Image (tube, rainbow over all chains, first blue to last red; front, side, top):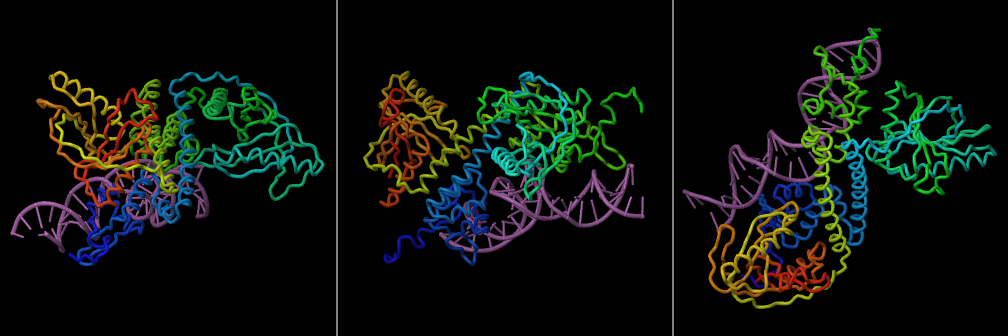
Length: 278
Length: 278
DNA sequence: TTGCTCCTCACGTCACGTGAGGTGGC
DNA sequence: TTGCTCCTCACGTCACGTGAGGTGGC
């Protein structure tokens, strides 16, 4: 009737049902997003509490719908939608990177499980034992989750060797990493990087100096490429099984011993041990 | 004390705390699994209600833990653990296939969103209009989700053309698919496969015979490879936007028109239209 | 007036996490 | 006797789904 009205006025308002089907969001979801302030109707009738949505709210609604299909939490969606185009793209990329990493972790767990179920008696591991002499060691340790470990180990070894050299003390050509529990993507544990040395060294805020007692260990020698799941999990399983069968108790944290030059060793060469002290 | 006892007897029982750390399952989770019958303690003290777990329950507990890391629902874990080794492996593969498909779907949604956020003004689509004459059509239709569509379209076209030929009637060399709503991986909609013909045809239980009225349509011509997300979503967006800008109402279901020989058309050739009747 | 849509609780789902308040074994 | 662990509720979390019971606009 009123031709002077802007075309985006009242006549573009719609009830929740229509907005719901057009945005692919359930009415229950729309009421929740209203309550959370994530997507508030353009107008709410104070008498009836009816929600009226404007046509130009559809874009935001559809974005939310697609982001929810990615299972992004509502809080994170709210933050992302605060950003400008290119920044929102960056935020989405960050989120998606996390999803991809978690997916890859799961994929390797599936491979491991497949082998467990198939009872393919897994690459037969050759378990040996040895006597390990007492050592003085310099260590850096911190609780962490699996994704951090890959960075932490080489960085810490470099720090330790640098410090040892700077103090004019002699480091031995071997390192090991002690795990005080299982480190996975969603459960952290103490990870301790150890470099043995001879001589006298002062501890620092970061670096502890310890004495590791002599002990026996059961160990498996592995190729460099086997440092990933599923192989490494089977290796741990195998040593733990051997320990149990032979009635041995774990007396120190289980460990990975890096006795080769990690960087220059080819993938298919033996490069490290998994060891259980007893 | 009693040397004749089996080694797996009482002395291998442990309290919930120890079983919890060894299995990487929270005590709260263990109590839930007990209540659900998914993992019941070997022994429960009737006086104190203390739960005692046996060492040989650790294997099942660890399997549950890993399957939960894959976010498999407890019900499905329970079913899987009922199966023998190789069968369990098959069940895991089935589950994982579903996860991979859902992940790939999400990945293409991310690509689409990236382009939306970057406002790369997307491959400029050339929107045209045309008048479509009335047609008699034979159709097969069913509600379905996105993963089924890829099979359903060619199968239905083949069925329709076979039936039309068997009745000695002449089919026209073009097909289209009408979508009565958005079809995604988790929302279904009616999908109707249409083959126009001249002559007289009897409907069957499966095949309906209809009359499509003459109308105008706005359409975009696309290359064969663009039939996937994200391109196809941008194309739909573009036509919908054009319709709105030009004040046109959608009067029939939006559709994809296959006017080329789909199988023998190379990926980078124009092969189909997306059309909105108005 | 009759339907239909909309409204607001309230409770259910899934797999737990997080206390509160109480008991039991060394 | 003192801690410590264990127990059972009960409620919270996340993002909704599913009614129950009631109101409002055509």
